[in-house]
Image (cartoon, rainbow, N blue to C red):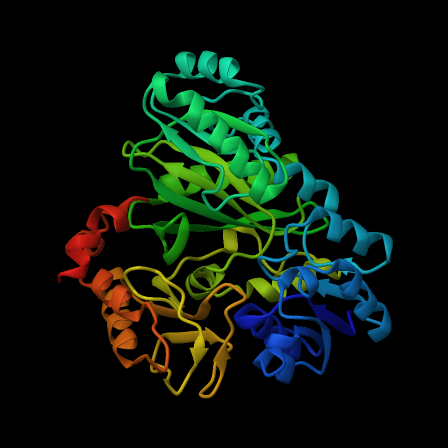
Length: 450
C-alpha cells in the first residue's frame, strides 16, 4: 500500500488523480509552477511544492526538480498523468533507479513503443494488422521514392518519434515526394530531436479507434472496449465516444484480442491504449500504442464502471486486476467533449480570467475540471479547461443529454469551443454516426452555418 504519491502534472488530470488517491486513503503531493500557484490541484493535495517558473521546461518537464521533490517529501510513487513526462522513458528509468514506483509501464517497454518504427515491427511480428509500409526508417530521398513506388501513391510520411501531426506529410505524386520528405525530417528533428521518418500507405477517410487495455504484474491482460476518436482538429482529438457507432461486437472482439496480444507480446503492465485506423470496409490497422492514461478515459469508465486511475494505482502496488475479461460489461453510451479555451472556429487560444462559471449537472453528467470563477487561464500550457462527459442508455439519448449539458455550460471572460460542440451535436452526419478523421475539415462550413 502506498502512503504518498507525487502527482507530476497539472490541470484536470492532476485533480482527477488526487481525488482517486483520497478515496483510496493515499496521501498526495502536488507540484506546481509559479503560474499555477492558485490551481485547484495544488489546493486539493495534502501537500504542494513549487518546482519552478511558468515554462514547462523549467517546471513540469524538469526531472531534477521532480526527483528532488519526491526525495524531500519521502513519496513512494509518482503518477505522471498524460502529457509532460508521462511517456518519457528517461524519467521512468530515473524513478526506477531511485526506488520510486512509476505508475505506468517499465521504462524499457515505454522506450520500445515510443519509436513508431519499432512498434510497427513488433505489431507485425505479433500478427497485429498494419498498413503496407517501408518496414524501416528511411535514409534518403532515393530510398523514400523506391518505397513509395512499391507501396503506391498516395503515401504518408510520418515521424518515428512523437505525434500530433508534426513531421507528417501526405504525398500524392512522385514529383512532390522529395520536398515533403525533407520537410518531414526537419519538422521531426525540430519537434522531437529525432529526424527519423518512415512511409506507409495512405488510408483514405479512416476512423480513429482506440482500445483500452489493462495489464497487471501477474500476467493478466484485458481490454475495456473501444473509443471512437475520429473528430479531431489539427490531429488533436476534441470529442470521443464509447462505444463507436461503427464497431459491432464481432469487430470489438477482434480489435480487443489484437490489442491484448500486443500488450502480452511486449510484457506490458499498467494501463495503455492501442490505437488503430479503421477503413470503410471495417479493416483495422495498428498505428501506435500510448503508454499512459488517455485524456478520454472517462467515457470508458462510464460505460464499463471501471475506475481506470484506481486500477493504475492498484496494479503499481502489485495487486491483481479487479476483474477478468468475461466480467467486463458494456452498458449504455458515453460521449466526452473537450472544452478548450479557444475561439470555437479559428482555434486561436484564449487565455485570461474566468469571470463567470456555470457547470452543468443532472443525471448522467460528469465534469472533470480544474477551473473556478476567478481562475486565470495561463497562456503557457495546453488550453483544456474541462472534460464534459455524459452517459445514457442509447447514443441518441447521450447526444440529447450532451446537448442539454452544453447549453447549461457557461464560462465568462474568455472564449471556449462550447459553440462548436453544440453545432457538432446537431450535425446530421454526426447524429448518423458518419464520422472520420476529416470530419471537421470537411464539414466545417456546414457546422458553422447551422
